[in-house]
Amino acid sequence: MASILSKKQKKKENYTLKELKSLGCDLLSSRAHINNLPLLLSFISPESPPQFVVESLLSLQSFFTPLLPQLPSSSSSSPASSTKRPRSDEEDDDDSSKTESDEVDGDPEVIFKAWLRSKFDEFVKVLLDVLVSQQSEDTLRDIVLGTLMEFVKLLNAGRFHSSIYHRILNAIIHSAVDADMFLDILNSKYFKYIDVRYFTYISMEKFVKTLEASALSADKTVMENSETENESKDSLELSIRRIYQVLSRIPPPQKQAEKSDLEMWSGSVVRNRKIKEKSKDQDSNLLSPTTIAKRMKLKFTKAWISFLRLPLPLDVYKEVLASIHQTVIPHLSNPAMLCDFLTKSYDIGGVVSVMALSSLFILMTEHGLEYPNFYEKLYALLVPSVFVAKHRARFLQLLDACLRSSLLPAYLAASFAKKLSRLSLSVPPSGSLVITALIYNLLRRHPTINHLVHQEPVDNANEANSEAEEDNESSRPKTNKKLGMDYFNNQETDLKKTGAMRSSLWEIDTLRHHYCPPVSRFVSSLETDLTIRAKTTEMKIEDFSSGSYATIFGDEIRRRVKQVPLAFYKAVPTSLFEDSDFPGWTFTIPQEEGKC
View 1: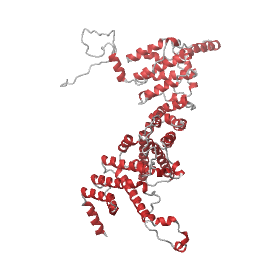
View 2 (view 1 turned 60 degrees about the vertical axis):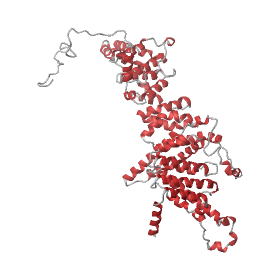
View 3 (view 1 turned 135 degrees about the vertical axis):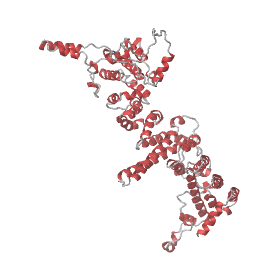
View 4 (view 1 turned 90 degrees about the vertical axis):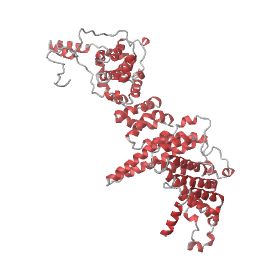
């Protein structure tokens, strides 16, 4: 037996490309050469030379394409149907149980078509293996994917064959090859068709449910081998990343639905009259472009909502939060379904909360979401690191938008103004500029906190006078101690108890002496009377939110200076400071002998 197999294997290896093409021509010419089909199938493998794979693929595709409408479904092409099934004793005794279906099972034509269907299924399987093999070239993958998509269009008699398409996506998601190449092909050639996008969302939802089930079973099972546990975790993360790659590459449904001509990969009109004569159940399954367009938003919503329930890796989590307000929320059937995901993200704190603020703000302002303690959470995000974060520009613009309402209580506006002014002492110059602009807008919108600009210690004097009447002169030293006290508690998280209304913006006054000239100049804008709204306008935060040392330096270079300060020295200075400026200190560097 081994010698026979070796001879067959040797004969296969000795085939030339010309002989392989001849086998394909013979197969297409007559049914008498049907045995060439298994031989051609054997050449489609990752180990075969690419030219042999392409030649076999083209021959088999040309052979199967006209036969696809005649092939039975894969469920009926069982091994028992491809050969004569042996009869049992009960069947022999009861001849009256024979039906027309039994006679059809014995029909040679039916057996032949069932065998062809099994070979077609094998053909699809080997194509998927070649598609995701690391040995395959990109050009070969493109050809194989195109062949599979042709079968998706033709196999189901004019309707989209979702089963094969699901297998294609499953192979891409679980392959060891980078998925970008596959997604580039799908995006450039197939995602423009509405039915391809529609069934992509359906497949993504199925994949997510499978991952959820596997994740739950993995949590319930205690794994003794840590390596196996790590491998399963890595496999789960890889699948999640691939699903996100696919979802993020599909064009949004709303933009495509606005087009007058909705193209379908499987064809928008059923041309074959025989298909029209099928049962009503089958006709109800036919999806027109209009029907798909109506259902697209629902499938989009189910796919994304189910995906966001998965344990996302941190990098994927951040990417989703950074773009969800533009790519997902506008196209959901009910954006309020994201409230759980966004509120949990906002409660995490740090950079994740900053990135979740944009989407949460949209739900609150446009979709009626009520989020308790929203401003307390927003207040907690005001830390020095947020002014150097990657997404600081969007966060600072949203911060200004959240504080825009004139209905905000005075204590809340005062707490934010005081918190920002305190941060201005510890952030880079670009942060001090945007803080000054934010405080400017707060003072203009909320006239009740304008006393923070310059507040006399009136309360302290009244308390001192009342204590003086009771204790004579014993309270006077206490009054002197309280004259320089700031009642603002920077560590307090309750905005009602921060004491900001009894404080003042003395930190802004210190910015007048800031080492960076743009900051010291910009602080003078707060000297205007902001209570007169007709004479003032709000500052655009986007003009300052993206600032950095580079932008400040660039602005200073382009700035025209009317007066240039000059320093004149009778003698060239040898040190930065004179010895008389700091008695007892020396600023000269002693030079060692032999060194300059």
